[in-house]
Image 1 (tube, protein in one colour):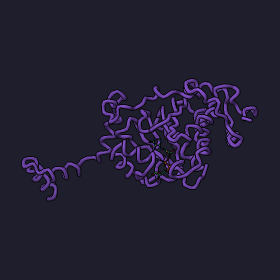
Image 2 (tube, protein in one colour):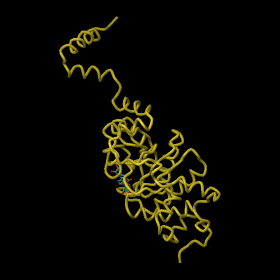
Image 3 (tube, protein in one colour):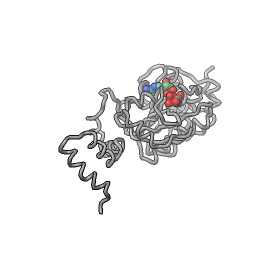
Image 4 (spheres, helix red, strand yellow):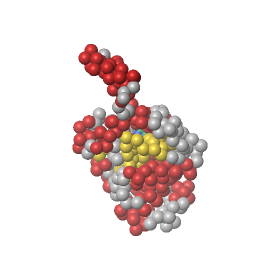
Length: 286
Ligand code: AR6
């Protein structure tokens, strides 16, 4: 038995269809259907890369294969090996013990990319978000602008994100498939920053993402020291790659010249390409 209200809707809908009463029709349809972000996410999730490419809003996207792995980057960019680490770098570096037998393999799994993270066609790009998951400035603003309004609509359903944690959403208009939102520390805490990288990498395992790109989390508006942040990013990535082989590429997206310089120096320590890069006590510049 239909209620009086349902009977009214049943009478109104055909009339609206005939008379073209758009306002009432829209209201009735949206009330009955899923939110727009959910419909779009379901559509995009089913698509392969070739089909997704037809819908991209930008032409200058970059595939993972077009970003040099670290081992090729060093060869192509002369002068990198002249960049030497400092005593402070060595102290920080000693916090990790590395499986040197994996060096050759892992040098092919990491990259530096200089530029805008929104251009990367990877399984996931990481967003340096705030705990309310509301579009802000910096890389967060760039990601929201490029992804379109459905990204905010999905973020609004997540109930925020604590500092040091990470949550994944669809990437909508971006060439990446997913955005992992992580909230970096504002108080300079190395443990919380490490947790951001760990949580993002754990999500790649959970979702079987094979490629991920990180911005330099917390080093912009949140003011974390760039060099220490890079040590934490590289140490966490190295540890993760040593024990997880589903990842084909971790891209460190360096937007500021200072970060390019730091990553080019420190990648030689964490992802050494020669025996003499190892932490054997003889590597320090005079
Ligand atoms: N691609 C890659 N990296 C970028 C881009 C880009 N398009 N734009 C900026 N960066 P920040 P945070 C670099 O400030 O310190 C927001 O308002 C930037 O040069 O974006 O974690 C959020 O809503 C720097 O190296 O993030 C939060 O409130 C790095 O991205 C707050 O800022 C991170 O800088 C988060 O601050």
